[in-house]
Image 1 (cartoon, one colour):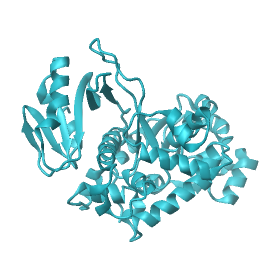
Image 2 (image 1 turned 120 degrees about the horizontal axis):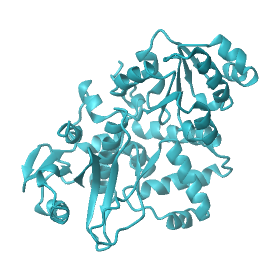
Image 3 (image 1 turned 45 degrees about the horizontal axis):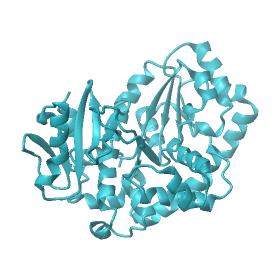
Image 4 (image 1 turned 60 degrees about the vertical axis):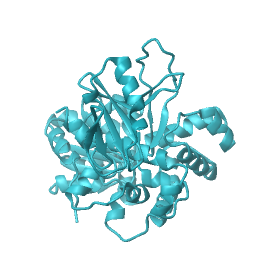
Length: 391
């Protein structure tokens, strides 16, 4: 069963405006399925196929003579040299809708590729399912812990494989295939340990020195490896907002995983029931919420505008969402029953910023949307409503 992806609308729109659309995202997020479903009459070629890749590497002109227009090129980053030739091909035809490039790393971040395709390519990111996409397909769960354990990768909703088994194989495949392509990392076991240590720091301020020390690597190596995880859409960093109200602010970003299920598997969680008693429960719930906020923006072709705010005295807002030049404070609490202290940081921010409480939100682990103390309380599976309230 095909589950409709929100990004399909934006993909079709950009294909009608740009000669090339690049569709990137983590491995197994559904990029190929989306492209083929949206454009069933386009030719599909995969550079994962050895014969096709050899053809593209050895005879790029012949490759494009064979595949000259309306082509989906899967895993395009496997042959970086193609991008220089691609520039000539699209400049010759001078029409939109020539190529869709898909890849499991953010290959357009590389300087040479970016220069080759500047002005010719639109970039989209496809992440694993949003909760609202699953809901529209009739797939729902009663408690958020089920989604934290299972995650949102499409394969987990097409087969009966257990999340633990699937993620163990996913991590191994990712390390053996993608990591080797992005950076020449010789100690893959140490890199896997590094990834697990990142999962243990989910939702926390990023301290690279501590992370490097615990992994037994240098600070520079930790920074480089973190960039690998970012480029392949495993983790993302949320930067602190600069608004200080004459207060000293922390400068370190916070670390999150795009998929809470992957983080849970790396933490050794074997069943959803473990999450209720796990010391990282609150951090995993925060990661679930933050990834939903990121997905909502990416899947509508919007640049993500998520920040957090924390001063040196310990006051913190989990997420400041920049919408239409307004800073919307969002507090995230995993509890299923609302407690009055959940509102303390929002009330502090609203007083400090002179903000309207009606434009602040508490996302919690319960089942009802409501209003408390003038603040909007949003259930865990309805974060999309935060954006919709400003449309």
